Image: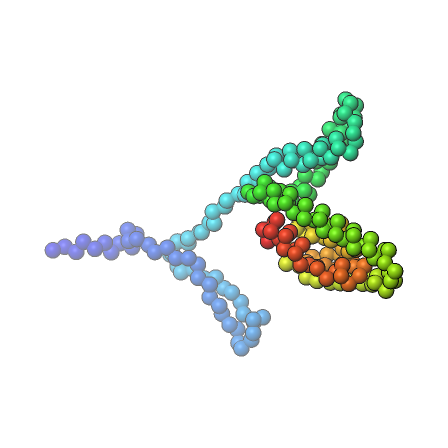
Length: 221
């Protein structure tokens, strides 16, 4: 019976070999004496591997632009109080220019999926903040009219680390502290360390405290 095995090297299937990397050490030297020499086995095809390129498509969403323009024109109408054609035209042009140059500042990472729910949570945070501002005003008023005012007022600087991570959350926290009478945010480091000036010891004792926790719930951090 004839042998059916094909011994013809031209017809035999050839193994695909990827270039081997051989490390050849010269003497007893360290890494500086080592060189990498690529070698290829003779008569073997080289497999050229190409990584699939997936070009990232930049989706330029116009929704942040539209929302920023609506916010700008809303504030223009509220603070200007002018509703004639001339002032409205100036408002539209001004707000349009501001939106073109700063829409990415208000929404640096685009709109998130929970954008609407985040604004709702922030709306629930504002009444609590207003209540804290009222309490702080009463506290500063008490200090101002207290007979021992000079003894009670103790200006000092406190520092603490915040667990908030995003810029918008830290900015909200810093502004909330400054809006509350008796405390002023002096500095916020990139690592989230807050420096706050307090008018007395009781004003700085609650920080970071409940205010930070409420802001963390607003932005889910």
